[in-house]
Image (cartoon, rainbow, N blue to C red; front, top):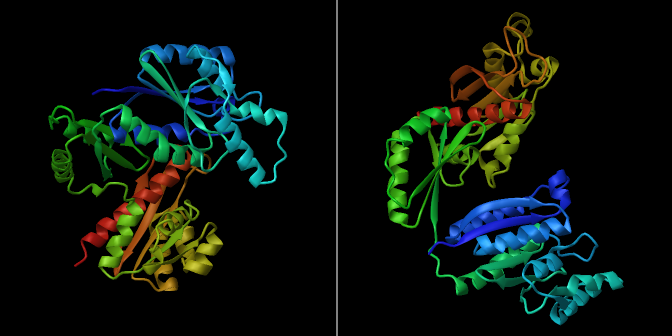
Length: 408
């Protein structure tokens, strides 16, 4: 059974960029996993005529229309009245919504004003969804083949409402099969090389293959309704990239590296220049990282490189801070200073300024220490400052993991 869905995030602040719409991505992911097909995601400004027109057209085209935002008590909260108009309904004072709102506001000693009651004006005859975290109930109305489900714009309110009330409601209306997915993370290859390999596979009918590029790694996402076949093809994809496969699922490069360090009873330290602590942050975002990650030194200036990492002054004079020689000295220095068996160092030109003809923006040198083995590599990363820094971080972690895998 194919159920066509669309998602509308309502609010001019979303189009202006003052608030980022994270609701649509989260909701799209949950609907896809539940077996629904999301065909459109759209941001809509607080314009009454436009909202009514969009909702009315969507009711003719889609089976399910999800809206987030616009359920508050202020003049620009238009979702309830525009949904009602699009569905050919009146708005009425909803006693359950009114009682819920009064109860929530009274709990926080908020003086209830006449304007607050506007929030309890909902489409006549709507189905409501409880809100355990906020003042606005969600609701649903239908017209013809289409059903609109409206939820709050506050992310944690929407998440809880969808999981606890909306999704169970949908399962009573639609006989859907759960869709499974596997993420295969691949590093160190251009997207075109991965695409060339995947084109040869001939995935079975009903299985989707999507390639996402994420600054320093490629995520191959397989989706389908048969988990056994999905897992089989995931293993086949992994086997085609023996040198570049990172991990399955939502495991990050950092968590994979930390797992390897634990398995081999190794400790790690970091010395960062151009990434400014990004590698350390990525590692410490993983719970339990302190078992193997001992700490790091952010050596942005040459003076700090010399004083804290013991980088010889003649290395900086002869080769410069952005050099394999400096990266080697930084890696050895931090391993000695923090007393770890492994270390990684990064130094480079992240941009937008600072590049030269010899060392243009995107030039990065990385040093790796694994026990007594020291390796340095020079890279040229494309993109803006953020992209260069993220690619540097992911490459440093991935290459270090590859070196550790080769250890006995």
